[in-house]
Structures are given as structure tokens and as C-alpha cells.
Length: 338
Length: 287
Image (cartoon, rainbow over all chains, first blue to last red):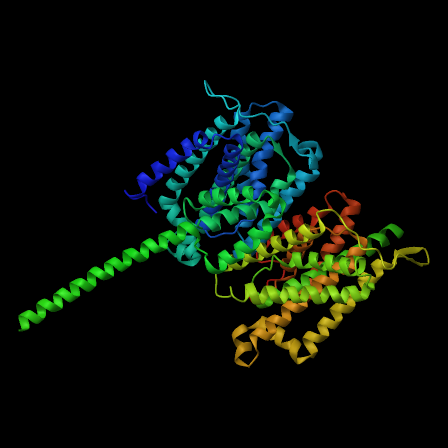
């Protein structure tokens, strides 16, 4: 929803906090974890567009992130392409493959779409794992170069990379807010709420849904490209659906269909898993039930909950005023009658 | 001829395992109208339960199979009562997310207990059966015989008994079934129990010639989805025929095309078919 005058200072405060974070944390490890959370947030923001705003559960999202990461990995390591050129290609290649995947999969509705994308994700995983000559197979790609400097800017240590990632996070959030507040964004939400109604309003279902899908895969590709340059090691496992599920968890915790929900969820859950480090591989013992409980009792997420309360409060105050007016009115009426 | 026969046998083995898993999935779909993504985890838990009964408790193979079926049936019923039943009024998205949450939870639990490494169920019947110049491992023949026996029993149960026909009735028309006095809760418990037991039996049958590991359910469940989309969601004969089609496609594809990419065949088939016919091969009346 449009950022009101009240929300603007809050956003500025958040941005200042994010910029000051490396200085306050003063610990390379914390900065590293935070950057990773931002990268996952970019991917989750993209997934939220198709899942939260358009209402389609795409289970191949991690696959598209892997396509972005592998594009950077293969181009920079095997073909010596400069990082930034590979970076741009990664986003567009993911989106390009997204066009075809979207055209095929969005002909299906509801859970058929989910099953289909689950299979698409698995095909991506299998291709990455089996096509040794191109993707290095199960070994993965190691020693991916860090992003090269732009002008006077260098990205060779953790905190300068943190700012790079932060820049892309802010840019992608800004772009997403432009998208969801535009007429197109309203079309996405209309489709989520009722496909029949949206069609009646003259929204072209297929074109709009494919557009949402392609935009979300573009986000996934960019996030993957950043991930490759930041972590500098990638393996086929990143295309697996458990990875998509991490992102769904971020979105659900933060608030599905809200702009900042995926970011909030990514930061909260990343720090939760980091503080439960011994649980790294077993995080799903906590995440799994957490998600089930969330969809059962708290499906709107943190930001959704906050917004619901705000709306309720606004409604209550309107009601109050109406009540007051009614009481006053009846008082006056009584007086005139007397 | 011999090689061809070998592939035929492989295809039949794979197909009957897939069909058992897909049958459970399609039955639950008839009740829930939701793809139960957790079904693959039930299959995996079934394999581990059998592995535990045979390996640690030293149980007989068939006893272990019954034990695994009981454990998984209970787990499936619990998942229905605790999760899916409570979500029946929620949007379908929530059921799907809850199902995936359950899948990953079960997988993580198994991995925490048994580790990520591969296990193997000792083959109870390592013999080789020889008929003229055709050879077949006994386990494969057992898989085929047991799977088809079970399918026959299930078919008779669903069509010839009153309790079985309540399941069919519920799948065909929920309101209508309630109107004639069928208890939805009972039917749903029964359906989940059957689907869990089928998954466990399939896993126990297949484990002696395959490996046991936490993510073993992924491929199987995805293929089961492909099968029930091919065969029509909720259709029982469709699940069996679809299972055999995928089984044969894989065994012949692995032999005549490439072993490396045999797992892609099922998905490529799905992508191809759904691209041409988005409503599936045999669209069911329900959807």
C-alpha cells in the first residue's frame, strides 16, 4: 500500500540502520550473515510477486536462482567473462527461461501449476547435476571471482560487498514498490483475489500472470548472480525445492503479499538459523512445524498482522466518531423536542 | 530377447512401485482435493521403519512390512487430524505449504536420527529365478506379485464392501455423501490410513533393490504426481496405468536413451503432455 507520510521517516530510519550496521556490528561474520540474508531477501521479494501478489505457488523459484548463480559461475570461471557482464546476462537469462517456463506452466491452474513448477525445478536440478561438462556436476563451481570494482569502488572485502548487496536490495525493493503500486500491480492482486473477476474487468489473465512470473524469475536470477559473487562457491543443491521452501518461510513469517514481509522474514529466520548453528542441516525440524503453525494460526505474517491491527483501529475510531455524532445528534433532537 | 525381457521386468517392477505410491496419493486427492506433498515423506518413513524393524529388531521381512505399514498409516492419520483437517476451510495455498512443511520436517527428523548416508535393507530373497533362458531376481518378482495382489485387494475393498464404497462416494461428491449419512471424518481417517500403508508397503518392497536415504521420497513423489496427472487426479485405474507407463518409459528410456537422464524422462513426459493438453490426458469430472 502507498507509503504514507508516517511511514517515510520509518523507512529512512531503517535505511540509516542498514547503512550503519557494519560499523555497529564491527564483526566480519555478522556482516557476512546479514549480506546473505539480504541476498535471500531479494530472491524472496521476487517470489512474493508471484506467490503473494498474484497468488500462484511457484515451486521452481530456487531453480531460477540457481540458473542465475550458475550463469555467473560458468561465465566467469570457465570463460573468463568479467563479473558484471555475467551478472547482467544472469538476470536476463533467468527471465528468458522464465518466459518459456511461465508460458507452459501458467496454462495450468492452482495446484496443477504448483506440481508442474515442482517438476520444472527438479528438471533444472537434474540438468545442473548431470551435465558435468557445463556445470561441473555434483562438484559444483569453486573460486568464483568476487565482483570487480566499478570506478573507485572496490568489492574485495566483506563490508564493501555488504554495501553492494544493500544497494541491490534497496533497488529491488524500490522497483517492487513501483510495480505493485502501479496499475499492473493492481492487476496482479485482482488475479489473486479472483481470476474470473479479473478477467471480467478486462485483465488479460495469461499475459499478466506470465509477466509476474518473468519478473519474479528476473529477481531470482539477480539474487543468484549476487550469491555466486558473494559466497563464491555454488553446488547443484541450491536448485532444490527445500531452498524454495526457505523463501516461502521468509515470506510467510514476514507477511505474504506485503512489500517488506520477505525482507523481515529473511532477516529474522537467517539470524534464527545462525544462532542455532548446530541445527544448520536440521533447521526444518523447527521450520517445518513453525510453517504449519503459521498457516494454521497466523497466516498473515508479522507485517500483515500489524496492518490488520492498524485497519481495525482505524475502523474502530471511525465507528467511535460515528457513535459520538449519533449520541450528540440524538441529544440535540431531545432538546429540540423538549 | 533376453535384454528386452530384462527391461520389461524392470519396467514392471518400477511401475508397480510407482503405482502403489500414486494410488495412495490419488485416494487422498479424492478426499482433500489437495496434492499431498508430504506423501513422499511417508514413503521414506516407511522405508526407514522397515529398515529399523529388520535391521535393529531383527524382524522377519513380512512382519517388518506390516509394522511399517502400521506406523506410516498412523502417521498419515495424525497428519490429517492435526493439520489437514483443521485447514479444510483455508485457501488451498495453505494446505500445500503445510504439506511441504510436514515433508521437510519428517525428512529432517529422519536425517537427525539416521544421518544423511545411504542404508540398505538386506534382500530377504537374494535368489535368482530361471525360466528357460530368462533370468529374474526373486525380489523383483515378489514386488510385482505383491503390488498387483495389493491392488486387487484394494479394488475389491473399494468396489465390493460398504466401507470401501463410502470412500468412492466421498471422492465423487462430498455433499451428496454427507447427505446419505456417510461420516466424513471416518472416511478421511480411513483414506489417510490406506494411503500411508500403501506408501509404506511400496517402500518396503522396493528397498531391498534400492537405497534408503532421507531424500529418497522426492523423486518418487514427483513421479507419483506425474502419474496421477497423466491418469487423472482421483482416478484409481488411471494411477495404475499411469504408474506402469512411467515405469516402462523409464526402464526402456534408461536402456535405449541414457541412464544418466532416466529420471528426467517422467518429467519431460509431463511437460510435453501438459503443454499439449493442460487438462491432463484423462480429465476427471471433479476438476
